[in-house]
Length: 600
Image (tube, rainbow, N blue to C red; front, side, top):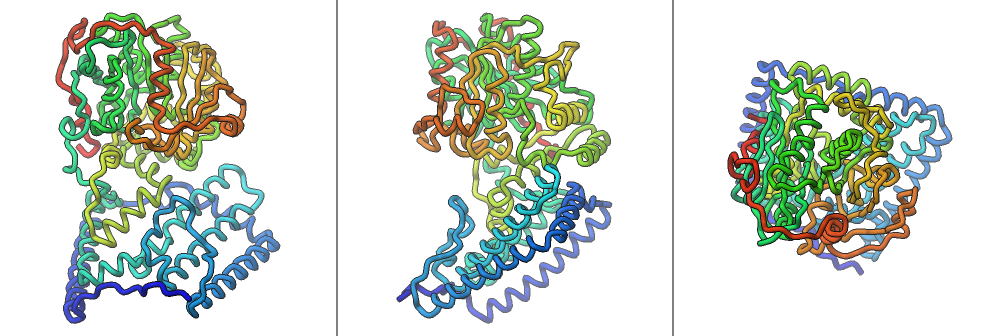
């Protein structure tokens, strides 16, 4: 017999609950009316199909209707699955033990509440949703005749649609929300509405979900706390040199090029998970580029400017600050893409100032760019260019929304439930604070990046890109390279980043970390999480490489440090403090550029 405990939420006084709900309705109407009035006077207009999805779905629908056999077979499968679910549910209601036919995938945290499994009604709602969503995705996947671009769009947006319809996202079908509503007399819904309207106002009519309170962290105090000095500055970068933590240091310094779409302190969050602090503690002299948050005045800055005023200028400044003749470089995400271009540029000019290069989740071959390619086609890029040319830059928030859609359940819908349905404040989380601190991108530079890299894939074409009159050829990069990718990366899929192993001329080591684009990289050894894979034999196929790879517990940081010592002189020199060399410190870390927010 099934003796599961009944679902019995605590209920507030019925009369008080009724009065509260009546008050909430009145206040809600007033708040919504005021918001709509403000929007009507603000002149906000929306493109009905900004992502150019309509044509792809019309094409898919036409091909689906032209295949009646597929529709009949699919409908029969849906009916049989529902019949089985109804039979199981009826048996359960009669007290029999039955197996759950449709279970959430491993790692799906939406149905963690016990009521989803203990209560027969909620269990049926859950399984019905999982059954239908999987049927829908499977049916769409079987539609033939779609071109690859349309198929990719349809698949991506069907997933968005399915995620949006999850019963966890609606107050009347989420047991946790029901409990909270009954226990608080509905105050959670009012607080949630206030949170929703505040987010809409902050986004000027577009929903800008609050993922963490801006006051939860303070730069230079609770995050970005590794001590150092800004020792170089130009229009695009501040170069930070960090104070040494050891009496002697490795001779060759380390220069980090972070992505310019966010702030550098993803690599210097809190002390316990700071990659920069850890690297300093291993005996390295560490420098990092802190990108400016560009405004209209920098609209003319090109990818060429980002190359010359970014990594190339930083290399010269590092060597001037240390008196050394070479530097070990690290590039993260699109910072790694820029690093690859810089290495090709330096190789073409016989510049040997770079000793080794480390790439963290960085793509150079964009043939299979993953979900991001859904947002990049001629129509969408033209619309984006028009908006950028009017403003002079791309709003960081717009790109952040794109990244959020790739992990909608974690980065969108979980906050809809917490902030709007439960009416709670988001939990303080350093990575989400950083994620909300996006930067703008100059119009000229970003247009070049989208077209030359994503749309035309010219970086891997010898001479496909010419910067400062120099044709770039990644095959001439001969420095030792260490490539780190992450198993669950939605931004830079590891199978795509692996392509670089067959491009560079020098010795290459590829390492695959567990987890995703951020957590797999920001993975300190003390955490003992995720693990990583290594395989010295670089197969042409990434899948074959992984089949024969060895899994290691812990963090790739330790493996990287061993590799860095192997490919760089182990000679130790007295520790270097900012200002010891030719450059005079300008200000304390984390500098000034890092405080420029996209909302300023």
